[in-house]
Image 1 (spheres, rainbow, N blue to C red):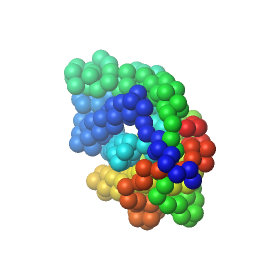
Image 2: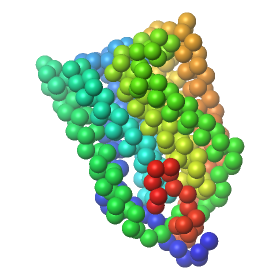
Image 3: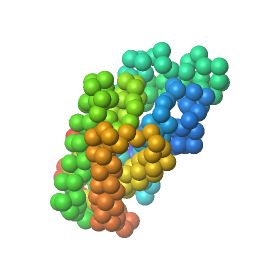
Image 4: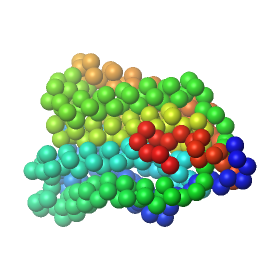
Length: 296
């Protein structure tokens, strides 16, 4: 380690892009969580059953928690790079799904609130991907390295990698062949909701994979907490709309087991990666691992 190397922070462009993303995540997450049976009036498209709306809301709120932790405690690149590939992938896939199923969206709804949310959705995911990619240009030029707080246990890195792979495999099936997946899924989905769930699964999967490659626990902590929150929120949503679950479908029990495991792995991981305020000195930038898609 080079003594005195400053910790690499976030460029203003990247910081502002992530702050706007966090606000959108929170607002849409609350919308879906508070009004899951009224998506025809308050969301971008009508969603049935309510379990699907609640599951999407849980994804949004979990992602908000990850971003909130990413933007707290110094706003470092070490944490931001973990979420970047996942955020770009989700935004791009959600935007593509919007145009694949354009007729399903509430652009012509009689409810003004639904029209507003639909345009916010479309514009936000249309511009977020290029903005994040552009923000990488000045970010890469900033000097500094990673905070040094301690290593990540191998078992937890392996667990994050495993969860990331499962997320990404599920995402590929949900997005590419939703009609086939719907036959074994744990509740009723449409091709549109299947693709949006797939987009979220890909985003979360890439975040977990990127986190599994980090050497310092400071960078991994938001992903650990996010995995925990995701499992808890999704379990609560499932209990809330238990009647929508198809218990005879194999996917229902696999999904529940996946969520319970996420809570267990996430909680344990959060306890071992929670770190004190990082030192002002950092590891050399050349020694710090980056996410699979982006190099600092």
